[in-house]
Length: 205
Image: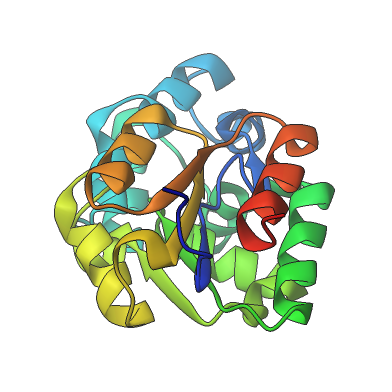
């Protein structure tokens, strides 16, 4: 039995429609610290600190203060904020896919593990980001994928459940959680594969 045609498409952000690299932030901020870029990247990207920030347990200011304490950072908050958020670039084929889905009259939503600094910078730099129907962010929900509450929040926002939703994400564990809820899902690695697969689901036959 074939799946129904999805009524909405859900996009993850990082590595799906936007590439990102915390190494950029680390290289920008390291001259203001007593450490090097590699150690700084480990602190802001691979330690529990980012998880706390992206689940809303600490604010942007608290993140800044913690990084300053750990590294001796002596720049101001605005410099830190700009560097921490200025790490993104468009993945053009996926941004174009989103635009084409919207042009076809199909609602789109964002479901992302992210933080308030990233969202601020993305809203400022990327006009396409204003075109989604709703946005579910981990730091606002207080839960990160693959935990159930963030998926539940998306279902409530979209007013849809199960196979009416088509979800695109680059992490297997996040896809598995969506499949467990009955969503249609695509594990994304390459736009050349993902784009035709999306249209296969939206326009079968």
